[in-house]
Amino acid sequence: MAKKSSVNRNKKRIALTLKYANKRRKLKKIIMNKKVSLEERFKAQMKLAKMPKNSSKIRVKNRCEITGRSHGVYRKLKISRITLRQLTLEGKIPGMIKSSW
Image (cartoon, rainbow, N blue to C red; front, side, top):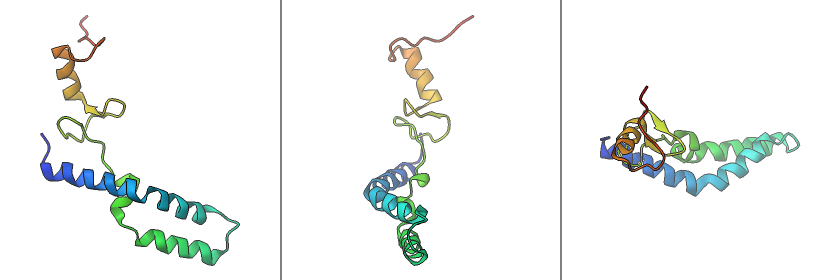
């Protein structure tokens, strides 16, 4: 089980990311547009730099929804490999069985 503080910090980052997503997208569009004047692009860059660091999508860590584990997490399922194996052995994931050969 992961530390509660780490899980809560990640939840805060997710909330900030969702809050500032549109604003960040608009500013980045201005920055990348070569037709806009250099001054306008620089102003947009400064506004982007003043935004909270944790509002960036890259700061969000993939964590297991059940345990909070940060390593070995399957993106589609949003659970860790250990939890996936445990749920499979309990028969809680339909169509998935432990392989044997």
